[in-house]
Image (cartoon, rainbow, N blue to C red):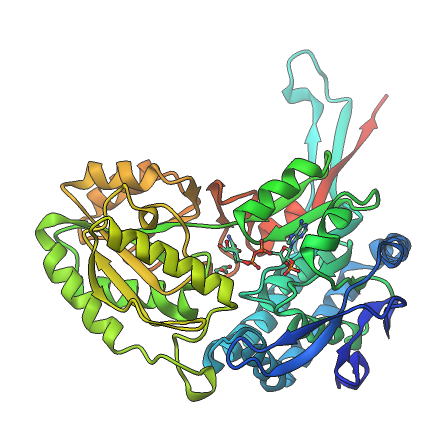
Length: 483
Ligand code: NAP
Ligand code: G3P
């Protein structure tokens, strides 16, 4: 089904329902982070082409907005079915392209099909309201405000490398069901998987121009996209640095941003330590720590810190390291730069006296799972997001010190609390400056209809199926004045 999207290894862009080659012939080579093997080339579109695409998306949105929501939903359901039918092929490409283990790649695709279906159904149940005037002082029953939701126009969806299919679809599907057209700017590493997703929507019968794609390096074309005069909404997931830059340069354009994190796992003395350790290890090291919701620090109360560290280390030792093809869970990082950055944080922690429990081994961009105890707040690892398989354990004296350190982070995505005492759990949860607190589980975004949001440097606005649809639509009021 994907024969049209590439020619001689060069992936095209979806424009007005057709896969087109760029006029300028400028391409970017995508090689696998696993072994450098050629995966394909993507095109770097020019500003002129970007302009044409925006014009086309703007035009296509008009009739899409008029399409009954039940028809939009049928197309989304069809897209979900096609995605599932082609899950193995897409997962294989994703695994090569971003070095994600096979099982996680496949589960990302299947989860995305479920996401699209749920979005289609949720979109059909979005309701407006009527508000009578007489509840406001001085007014009689002579006015009624009829409030409905209408689309915003052209949504620019920018996704990161770590979930190229899911975090593209989690923008596209809610935007479409709300009646917007979408321009997808996929991550450069991950673009090929994301272009397959775009073809799935296209093949499902989406009218021409309702979904277009623009490939090219964010550092080259990104500023032009986010400041384009025809963009009506920016839905961005990626690093805090880029998110902050976009927020600064785009003028008065509403946006939804999911950015970096430094999620803490707070472990109290009465916790089930075996369960906590399992959760922490799975949270910290799956996809080699390249998840915004990875556990990125453990705040362990002193009295159980020795035992917890031992249990975490036992679980880390069981992780398979190597090639995603061989079922490894800790696989090469997305590129050498990412691995060098993780190494910098490790070196800093060692230099400042952290106790290395496991790891500190690097083979090119493959970082072995690394665990530190006795990390202190003067170390970069206590605060910076490694986006790699390294976990610091910070010892604390009590609950209030854990809360203080947790909140001193510039980030505020999620946090976990491990305890059997619900009074303590709710006391801590109430004080943490994060979007979501998990009690006795690792941080995670799903299930995807839950609200998912970051505060502080972790984002703006709420994702989650209904919340994303609401973010990409607006209220419109028509007031009926009765004589
Ligand atoms: P990134 O470098 O910020 O890139 C994200 C996307 O932005 C890519 O498509 C990138 O394109 C594009 N981009 C780069 N510069 C741009 C610009 N000036 N204008 C517009 N777009 C631009 O992030 P990443 O390395 O892909 O992803 C890792 C980061 O994302 C981590 O910090 C992680 O925590 C965060 N993340 C957050 C969440 C969440 O939900 N909170 C989820 C996943 C990831 P190119 O690929 O072409 O550079
Ligand atoms: O980093 C991607 C973010 O959306 C997290 O998703 O499912 O890994 O918690 P998940």
